[in-house]
Length: 120
Image (tube, rainbow, N blue to C red; front, side, top):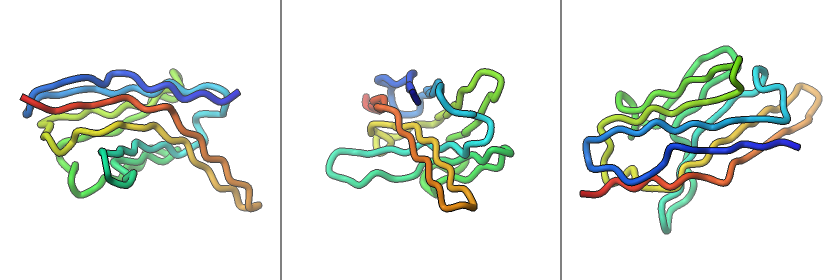
């Protein structure tokens, strides 16, 4: 079965760094675009960063220049390096694998999330 398992969350002071990891199994990882989303209390889930199967990346404006998404296809893992963290980055961070084929098939998988808290 498909599994996405996030790790690396925790409590960090403002200005600090964290590195999130998402270990993926059960799919052909290399052909899936991957994304990191986050959801803060009382807010909608939002896209933080995405990376295509070819390695192209995109970021939410709020994290550009501070966060970096990367993937290791040999290890079936996607990472999110988060620097210069702010209290407003506090949220549950989710890993997502999404692929839409030309035949109308849709594959959408989520991890259970990891809590990131930025506080002094």
